[in-house]
Amino acid sequence: MGTVREPRAEVPRAPGRCAPLTVAPLTGAPLSEGEAVELARFMSALADPVRLRLLSLVASRDAVCSCELEVPLGRSQPTVSHHTTVLAGLGLIVGERRGRWVWWRADPDRLAALRRALGG
Amino acid sequence: MGTVREPRAEVPRAPGRCAPLTVAPLTGAPLSEGEAVELARFMSALADPVRLRLLSLVASRDAVCSCELEVPLGRSQPTVSHHTTVLAGLGLIVGERRGRWVWWRADPDRLAALRRALGG
DNA sequence: CATACACATCGACGAGAGTGGATCTGGCGT
DNA sequence: ACGCCAGATCCACTCTCGTCGATGTGTATG
Image (cartoon, rainbow over all chains, first blue to last red; front, side):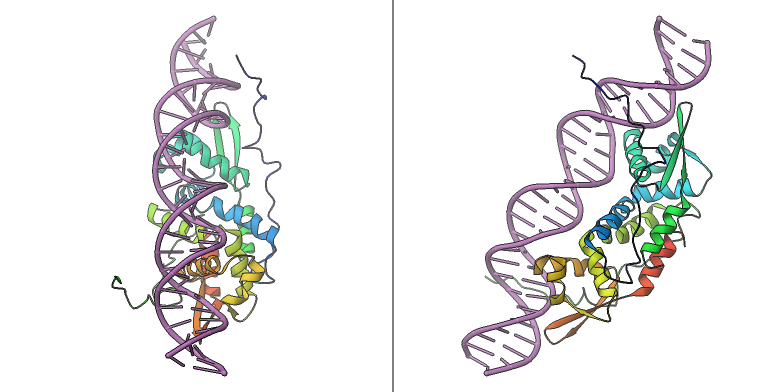
């Protein structure tokens, strides 16, 4: 018995709506609860060595295919897919489907915003 | 039967030996496994809303006593102590004992190094 | 010395995250 | 149409981490 299923989320790679990042530098006034939760989401995304290496791999080249990540990261395909989803959900990387492949590129503005939130 | 006990670790507040932060910007060459682990430790420390607010509270003033943190953070004394220990273990805040109190201050250089590691 | 107070440590619990095998979806080639 | 492949989703397991009550340690004060 097949359960009814949504047509497949267009989400993970979409550059459209992802978590905002409107946090004032934490060296200024104390962060509000909401600002802290928002910023913590981004920090959590970068709090994993695999995701950091994934992000640096993507950022150090123009575009990288998912299948090119499994070997250098030493992780399985589902795990790599999980990590790209997390980073893309915050807009740190953006994916574009080309045929069977997804090409990822880093968003430098997102990282810059993060640095600013850290007191830049 | 009292177990033999070390004279009490001088560690948490000590500015002496804490985790280094010698990571090149992740926008350059891909991070090595070791660099990623090292950087992830710092990100993990900032991946919690309570610790972010704690850090911003300390950074926004000259020095803050531990007992002044429980109320604004809405956390118990053991929890606050835990968080200050985590941040101090990475050198993001530095504590100084004065009588019964510990006064915390933020280390701006540490945050600057973090921003640099994020591609500054 | 006794008391009060600030902070650290211990122990236990619950929630969340990283991981990968199995499986499903969808695009491409023959 | 069939098989192949890239990637997403499901599911279960394990482990880490945030939290706080209870307790220990150390310092000041009466």
